[in-house]
Amino acid sequence: MIKLIITDMDGTLLNDKHEIHPQFWDIEEELTKKGILFAVASGRQFYNLESRFNRLNDRMIYFAENGTHVVHKGKDLFVNELDPAAAKNFIEVGRNIEDVQLVLCCKGSAYVETRDEQFISEIKQYYERLDYVDDLTLINDPILKVTICDRKGVENNSYEAFKKYEKDFKVAIASRVFIDITNITANKGNAIKAVQRDLGINPEETLVFGDYLNDLEMIQNAGVSYAMKNAHPEIIKVSTHITEFDNNENGVLRTLQSLGLVSPVVSASNI
Image 1: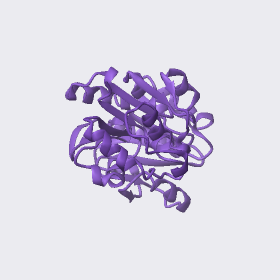
Image 2: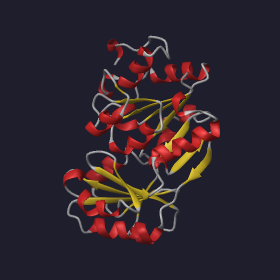
Image 3: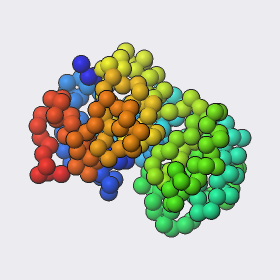
Image 4: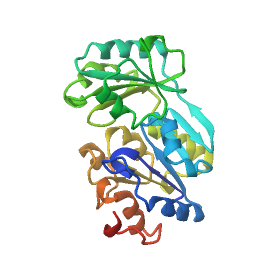
């Protein structure tokens, strides 16, 4: 029996316009009435998730910043900080890569050094709190992760400069253009494992949806895992199932419907 459903956001629950399907709210309410917890696990900032799901803050579990900041019912369950000296090094490495922008993701806010309008417009979709500073290395705020934004595509460009740190840090390719660097123990899977333990929920009672490489550990900690039809090939390879529909076809909610977990209210006509 499924007791916990966890979904990634971008490329998974959200369509490519970063929209939540209007039927989501009714489906989440139905799951809640059945005693099934619904959670989101994302590279997005907690304050962004809290804003997107504000009507559910009394019950939603937020696995924010790739599992470094977990909040339930308005309370921090835990925070996994990144060493400031390590963060400074990653910032300095990133500054030397052409056409790369940096975001320092902290517990209180996210910080950027650039005022590039195109970049700011893109990044504001993921961060509710965003501040401009002259020097990221001088920030005094508990650090969660360093995010590298590479419009050329991280796998064929900036990842090369950071993969040598993978023995000591988690270097997660979060999308085609983002790398998130965190403490080695910080990932969606470890965060989910801790919450499963606290709530008395087994992996076999957990259903997850994901699409990209930062979802790998999450998928490994669930008895039932769905790679989105549009997922990265490596995620498709390790998941137990693949959705019939992609994120633009409302694949998450339609899969919940096909599994009989919710009433058949989602159809192609209202996507």
